Image 1 (cartoon, rainbow, N blue to C red):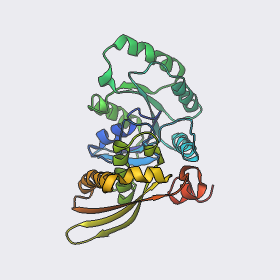
Image 2: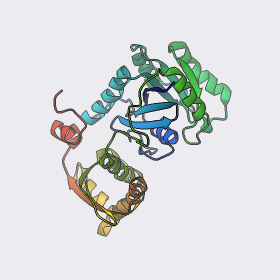
Image 3: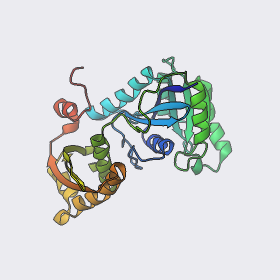
Length: 297
C-alpha cells in the first residue's frame, strides 16, 4: 500500500520547524536562523520513499503581527491547518507552559484534522521531570493523536516520528515525481538562501525589513548567472547592507553563493544590488508584488 498526504508544521517562531524539514529531507531547502520570524511563506518540502510520499508544509511562526506582513504570515499558518491530513504542533522542550502556545492549541481544537504534539529540541533538556510537568497541561487541553519528543537538530527520534506519520496517512497517489524536493521554483529557494545570509550577518530591525527579488537567472555553458535585488525600508538600512566599500554586500554574496551552488550543482555568478522601498511591509502593493498576498482577496 502506497501512502501519501499533506502535513502542516506549525508553532511559534523559532521552535525548529524549518530545521525539522531539512532534517527529514536530508537536504537544505528551508532557511534557518536563531532569530524569530525567519520563515515568511508556507513552504513545501517533499519526502519520498518506496512506500510513501509526505508533503510537509513549513509555515511562518504564529505571532501577533505588528505589520501587515506579520499579519499575513500568521494568517497563512493558521489557514494551512484546515486543508491538510495531519498537523505537527511544535513546542520547545526547554520552555515552561506558554500562554501563546495555549492560544494556538485553542485554534487547533476548532479543526477536525489530527494533531501530533511535537516537543522539539530534546537535546537541550537535562531536567526531564520539569519537561514532563511543562508538557502535562498541553496533553490535558489538547486532543492529540500522538505526542513525540525529538531533536530536529540531531535527528533524534525523527525516524520514529516519520513511521507514525506514515501509519496515520491514508492510501493515496504520488503527487510529485520522484526526486522533487519542493513545489517552490528554484528562484524562490535562491531568494531565501540570500535572505538567510542577511539574517545571519545583520541585527536589530534589518533582518525583518529585508526582502530579496531575483531579477535575472541565465544558464550558460559553464555557470549560472544570477542577478538579485535586496529590498530594505530605509536608506540607513541600505548603507548597512552595502557596508564599507561594499564589504557586507560582498560577504552576503559569497556565503549565499555556496548554498546556491549546492542546490543547483553548478558554478554560480551572483550579482547583488540593494534598493529602498519605504515601509514596504505595510504597503499592500509591495506585499502583493512580492508574493505575500493574493492579487484578489
